[in-house]
Image (cartoon, rainbow, N blue to C red; front, side, top):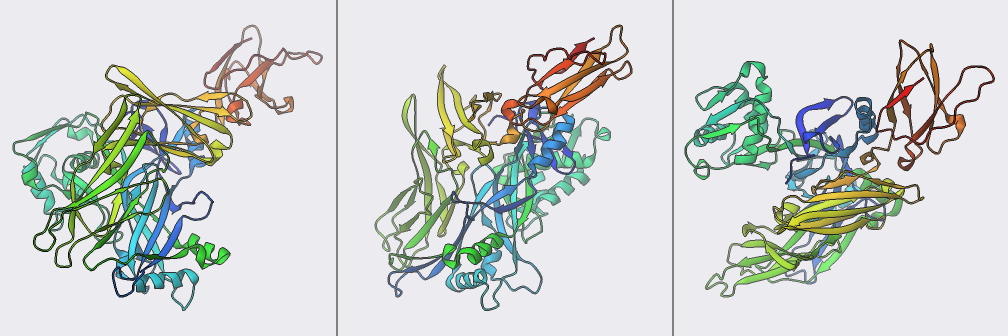
Length: 599
């Protein structure tokens, strides 16, 4: 993954909102979400469902149960953030920060609210790389019926719940003029003492350890520490520990803060490590957000009835010992260049209980349904298996199959994220407001054996999102985007960006929103000058007048275009004298460049 354009965690803009600069100053500023909400389906209704499941034969498995499933979407104050940005940088563009992975759990609204224990457990969110996650939880029949009654508001069973999501945002760790050396075994043993027996340590505890342990026996720091706040050094070192020695895991209890599961010292090697903190490195920073997932569902029930949210399904009976595994993914259903995508499940023969090997393959289609596969274990064995994802890609060079790593797994619910597959997905999505105004065309370019492969794509109101697939670890891939006005007002071409997940909105266009131009006027043999400015597409009654004097030779021209495709302006001088006519209008000028005048 290219670091260019990723959020730079160094010195964010902290105003009414939190905004990160793009790394290396190239690309869009990145806005941090301030909450979550239930996402909408294509028909505009909340993407929320409770499915009551039973077998054809109640005397045989599976036992009756429920499946709670909904999609969450990050919430952003885009207009507020763009206003804050444009006050600092004319023409700045903005995209939302997207979480890479996360967990969601429920917690009671009050201490007196009684909530089933299985609802309180953290569940992985299946992310799509664009700030949208899918939650899937298998419930006992009793708890599923309790939740159904709560949605209906019957029997006094209104569950007092709110949800907490713990997620990570990928960016670039701040660079510091320091070098840190350490023994990884000693460091990890010291950090592991701050967590539980599974080596899961709160990230805050790791930050506090480094804040209080700089230049201790475990760490040797080279550089001027007096010029840098210890908390800044601690955050950067925690970033590096997460990337090199840990994985993200949820808090032990709701509200306690995300944790990092550390590697065993035996897996880190021996000797001393040297980290140059001035070198750029990717970093995963935690983010905790809250939402009420049931408010939208209850409103839908009130408006259209319980059947709009609660479904019932009958599945074939399975033998005792067999395991039905549900698969949940949140990949965009439109996938460019993907011939096939799926998972293969395997279990070796278990003689004498089960002489045959288990091999089952489930292909993930684009229907959006939650597939399931039945693994035929014997009743007397542990239900443990391996899984391996695969992808079949097609491009100008032909068709090629890629296999993921083999992982050991157990359980009846498999959450799949884009990173679980043996290819890199580059999801691109455009907002409805942008697609109502423009047709979006894009090109994915990547080098391959001395040549360049190009993949063209389009986003429409019917298909606003697409997942582009490229070989894992492919370098040098870029995205080029252009927006063509539906009214024939022109085309806006965005600068090429590295092929990372991309969300497109009106805020992604430099020509959208308030435009500001620095206007300078050099006065020669006159005491003042008056100029009129007219934004493109506006009547002359909307002209803006600016006065220039010897002590005020610079003015800021600010205006709000009618459309991003009509963002230019014209100007003319208002001549002296009561009978004087204005000079002719100039040609159209771009707001991206300052204007220098002479009188």
